[in-house]
Length: 322
Image (cartoon, rainbow, N blue to C red; front, side, top):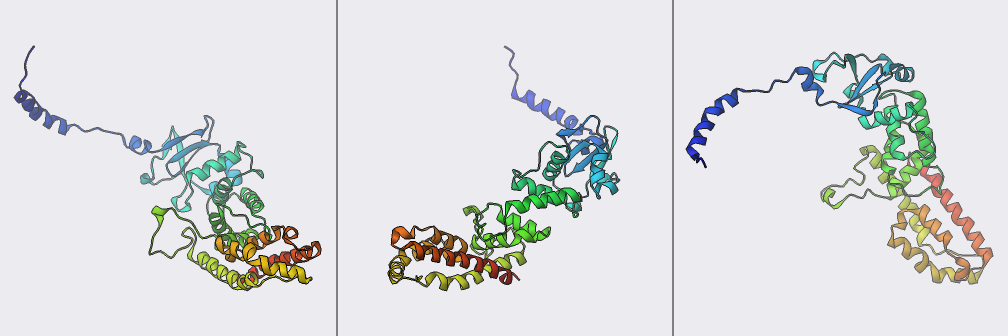
């Protein structure tokens, strides 16, 4: 076996380093810009007549399909700014969606899924899909009026505007922000109620002990309106909750006197029911009062009264939100 000393390797390395340092990898300018762009694996058609870029994704689609429906795209021209990336790909001009429009690649993909009929926008459409379409089709972005109107209509169906529609939605805050930004008044009231009565829950690692922001995803003016609404709800409903109900019959009134605290007040205190009058009233209505000792006549009368209180709260919210 031939033995090679460590001095040999040190000498060889010293001689080689200057040569290695002088070597540089030369990459053509177009490739330097190109390597960051991602061709969409689905919306890259061989017969496409337009290469559209949003963020770092490019799509080869059909110009007439998009320009026919979009006021923005019909007036957009290929980018001539060199720092925006290559002016052409595969010999075709690249149409850069202006950064100031803030179009997300994911939203554009959802739009193309709709335009190419790959996904039907029916009553089963999820909120994230509707939110994407609402943003990208708005006049602030790509301006597809008919698609924007359809997305609005589907979003309204997700949030019925009536006092019984108080189910908690994990998307309430984002939906409220969208309803304010894109002027969808029909769903604002139920969303304001839901957001105001369900403070944003952050993960422990997101907690900031010095922060007083209850809804960090919302604009300050929207958050202020939520806080004001919550204050009005508490002021209105506190005396309602803590006033023991009475009935037309003395025996039934006695039942309320005995059961109101354990069946109504205490559960409300345990789960923030004081600031959620619609839910609390619904829970009161759901109690089997006949089994607790009330007569059917008084149960019917009180149920109508509690329904009326729900409608009263719902109606007063219009004033509280103004």
